[in-house]
Length: 368
Image (tube, rainbow, N blue to C red):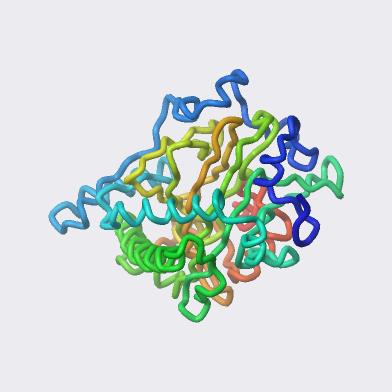
């Protein structure tokens, strides 16, 4: 089904009954996920199999008597993974369920003609609305003209600062969609601030250090829908990347498919936990912490049996903010490992060159 900008929505492709994915969705061999057999790729249980699990940090509802325990667990998870689940985080489980519900209702039950009323501008990177091509990369070593697309549709919401928030640009199908996204945005901001405080403290920095460096949050909420794919062994729902901002908070449904790269060598599947929130450190936090904590490289794989949904909430600096290693972490024996960068320039580079793992943040590493 051809839609605005000449692009095909992935959900429409999947529903058309095709047996093979179009060539623009086929990853080059070195980037393809490994499915041990075709049947395993069709079942949700295959996603949960792993010999290593993402750490789970109990926040104890931010009980002051438990702060040391939570802070130590977060520091360990940041050093070893750059990602961790949090439980007892203070966000009502009913709200997590609600945003999954309204997202699934929009993608599964809203007519395509209604969805297209909210189509994003395909010529502008990360524009608000309903789309399919937020991330795309050029494989220059193969063919400068080749674009490898993700097997995913999404709706991106600009939620903070409040001057960017305009719920009239969001669906009202189901009727409480806008109300749920607004509540979710406000709760995620508070949690992100608390988590950055604990992350700062885990490095013996003042609680506000990372948040002060980031400044007022620019928050986007992206609801991603990954339709069933007839050839999951050839595709990715979302190509390998680290997030460009400061911190990402993500929830998913029970299908599974999110993977994180452990120690630069092994993909580990993130087990879905319905009441937990996954925390992903992003590139600007890696710079601010001078590499003591590294951003998490991750991707999404597909399956041939069930659609999958995730909700990612990104917390980024303003584009005018310059990000540099925190001065408190620098000294004669600890020189800066990254050059400073204006965040807007970093974003432009990220979208122009494509994510391709962590190459954008790695390009800022200083020699020596």
